[in-house]
Length: 294
Ligand code: SAH
Ligand code: AVI
Image 1 (tube, rainbow, N blue to C red):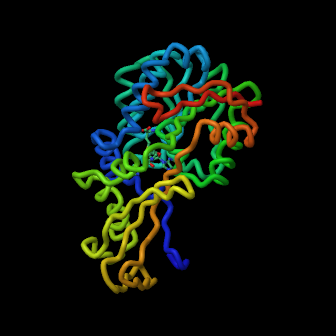
Image 2: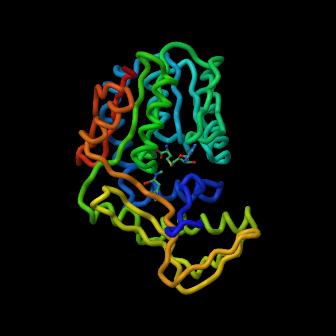
């Protein structure tokens, strides 16, 4: 917040309210990624299961409500399922619901931040380790962070281990723009909730009506950028700190990188994976990559 371009990391979106708003985004007609990834997973489930193999340990990063994971759990019948999420609320709800659906499955929920090194106990699960990272959450990391994250997971799965990563693809900028500027304003509420959370948890005095959601596709960098734009000149207090805003000045709250299939394959290889398989939805809007640790 003290840099010339004020910015906040997107991982802070996900308090209980933020997770609920994200779940509402996934059900919006404009937000195609969830529907595209679900339909491609259903369509290619047999091939995905052949790639990932049955009976291993399934680790999922950014599992949220574990919506797509159900399909994989049914197809792979893993020895353990280890969902990892920064949102305790989403994680506990998802684990409780999954325990009812899969009473014999060993479910070990880990409340943690995957941008820090995480150790996952070897006490859970057996067989091959498969990391599942759906939703294009990898797109919320910058290219260098995404590479570091892939390197970390490669060492976590070990030689021969696998990774399934959902990656949103480059497409018509109008489709992208609509997905992050929905008519009902749910994405705007999700973005503004970050300020509400700072007010609640850090004793700040952001006036939410004095900021506006702004999202656009930055074609040169291949990413959606989300910002909160100050509607006028104002000063905000966060604990003992003061931040001044000019009219039109923004806080950059999220990037959502969109890849080409080849571009993501090159990134995976640079992190020590073999890009073995890729599955697409019918429109070619979303991809699921099957990577094997080299
Ligand atoms: N996998 C789900 C949810 C995607 S939303 C889907 O495909 O729909 C992104 C999820 O990642 C949220 O549940 C959020 O709480 C979690 N998340 C974001 N940053 C995180 C971090 N640094 N560490 C752990 N979880 C994170
Ligand atoms: C979680 N992540 C992949 C979402 C995305 O599309 O970048 C978060 C989101 N931001 C606005 N809408 C959805």
